[in-house]
Length: 195
Image (cartoon, rainbow, N blue to C red; front, side):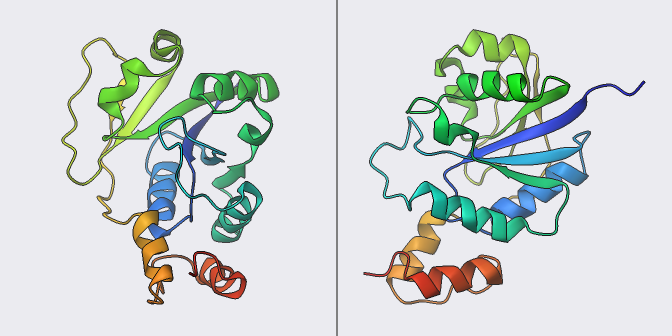
């Protein structure tokens, strides 16, 4: 009998989703021991309070458009109904309730690694979860000695940010190839981030 399905959870505001997110998610879904990667759209990160976010339904729609046709990727709105700000441990508890046969793995960037011990219920995350860390430009990855379930992965190093894309849109500059064509079209048609 096969073991539990292993699913990586990639959290983000995806404001908007871009090709860097997609390359990373697909890389992790196809070149690791994960069966799939689920992109969890966060309504509000406790570390990004005050950031100008598109409405959550709009960000969810853009992710759905971006991953259409890739059966290894899925988008989740689970945090939309949880208390805010959203905490990873609460989301994990809810996903385990909804998918008891699935083994979840937390996917996070090297820039988040030093802060992990300060996350809500960090000792439970440390005990209950494999954590896969992917590199981020400008952030050397230093392994946490007390976190034996942290595994540093090789992954494409992509220096592309949603902030750069939003500023490009505001300035009337092209975002072609920075986001999927379907996402670019919706951003343009609806005037997202236009001043």
